[in-house]
Image (cartoon, rainbow, N blue to C red; front, side):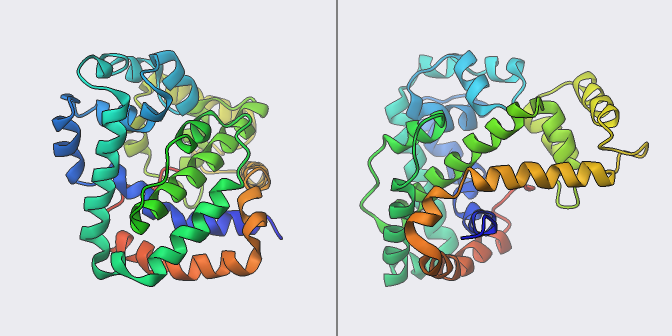
Length: 280
């Protein structure tokens, strides 16, 4: 199978997972379990499967955040709740949001079949060197098909993300340079949004821009050079190669079936405005 399959699968499946971070249902559910500061919702909900971990571990495994941004909420977030409570709250957020966004599709036979195939793919992912994936893989899949699918897509996303971080580390690319590089690509995320989300200072962004220029990746106006575009594709290919195990496991035919089945649901989520600008 060509590695482009991994990229296509990510593009189709991603909205089913990502919507959970921006769902309006999140505020009530996380507040109920003791996460009183809204800024802690993302950090706590994504790291909860690892346990009540320190700021250092969250900073290291998430890769993209400024350490100061993480320390603002971790480990304080564990003072009034438990990781187990947050994990269950996150499933409730996913349940409510998917029911709102997908309607009757939640109860369809296709949803159950898609969950079965996606879980089989996720089960084929090796955990070595994939800390966030491994932590989430330790959670038993829910019985409800739409939540089982959401959980499987979460596992596949974290598996790819761990591999992407490794590809960046091998190339000596740090978090801010990675964000600046991505935001300069044709499909890059909104730079102002990324700066706010990840908490890096203006000085850090300026240093990242200088690094990209020194590498020959950007022009004076900040646009990518041919080298910058070429090396970005090399990075994405390395990520794709490291993400192929689940797709080889289920085979090309079922990959195509899963993409075709999930695509209308992903479009519904995107069309409903349930996603923030793409994060890469």
